[in-house]
Image (tube, rainbow, N blue to C red; front, side, top):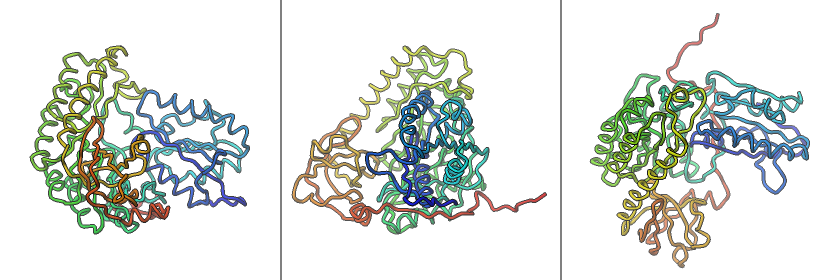
Amino acid sequence: MSTVTTAEPRSYEVRTYGCQMNVHDSERISGMLESAGYVRHVGDEPADIVVFNTCAVRENADNRLYGNLGHLRPVKQRHPGMQIAVGGCLAQKDRGEIVKRAPWVDVVFGTHNLGALPVLLERARHNQAAEVEILEALETFPSTLPTRRESTYAGWVSISVGCNNTCSFCIVPSLRGKERDRRPGEILAEVEALVAEGVLEVTLLGQNVNSYGVEFGDRLAFGKLLRACGGIDGLERVRFTSPHPKDFTDDVIAAMAETPNVCHQLHMPLQSGSDRVLKAMRRSYRSQRYLSILEKVRAAMPDAAITTDIIVGFPGETEEDFQATLDVVRESRFAGAFTFQYSKRPGTPAAELPDQLPKAVVQERYERLVALVEEITFADHQRQIGREVEVLVAVGEGRKDEATGRLSGRARDGRLVHFAADSDSDSGIRPGDVVYTTVTSAAPHYLIADAPVSAHRRTRAGDAYEAGHAPRTAGAPGVMLGMPRLASRS
């Protein structure tokens, strides 16, 4: 890897859009840049290097990127030597089109070659020309790259990349590629390394996390991985996202229920409650299959908090189809939902479907869905009043915390909790610490605990936060993907 040799280290800033996978990819981008000698940007002056880690899922992703690039053009003109890089899913999709539309961009890199960024930046500076490098397949698993973690108490751990599904509305498989699975030992070694630095919670990541094991032929691998995480001393919470209903098996529910540090939280996308729409979406389950999974989860874990994703306005969706979605939402009793208006993405089969719905119809249905979701989640949260919760204190979760004198964090089931922190007994609570308190009131999107904190446990994660130390993982170059195989040479 190239090393920066200027007299003063050049500063960098990473701007992230999109899903948790992108957030974790940005941690890797930061880790690589710091390993190459760059430093994180602070202060009012612009960074020497600005990296956009992009998403291509939503319709306005392109406009957002090119709008931001346009704002940076005069900044770059005023600061000779500044570099701009664009990576992620939109870069994988648009490729050289980015430098055609924004010729002041220095580097474009894709989802399969995050590790090339430092070299591409150096090459662009040396040649004084844009460098565009997009690979068609993954060469190095991203988790083997150096990583600068953003949190002292919680860490993302990728167990797979890519997706083998063919959902008609989704562009991700064509940009991230087919599913590639890491070996269990590599995943557990990364988790153990994080815990050794004080991390209390990990979230296992995959585009289709519960199909883990498909590459090496073990359909029960994900449940085994959850149970293995239960044997790691010091790991207090394990979460995962996002599973697909077609791959959700009973052994995973048993592993969740029987492994003490696996949180009783499930985020499982529904997308639609209409079987006709699910078929058009190429979602290989139907509403009753989805509801049966929730029934089994609640039978094994009555306290489970279940959240979901829902798309409104898919091409051809009728009022009857939409009512079917509302019916499933009522029956599912979600603790929360991410709701989306269908976004037409060029290159997806759904973009070519007839009966694209008028914006006004989609908007009206969307508003009805949001109103129902908030009614249900508010009722669910009101049932939590009087319950004692264990809260892992977080940074910046509550926008009104400063005004209310509260701190915020997540309960074990993933619910956001704003808790009182103004009494003498609450002094010294730090992000990464654990507190116990009682829920006193609720809102559709969070719980409030204005009761006195009943217990406060100082943690190594809190110590790390106080010391300003963020966990870093050095990476392990050369780790293979999937099953071992012999290289062939012609």
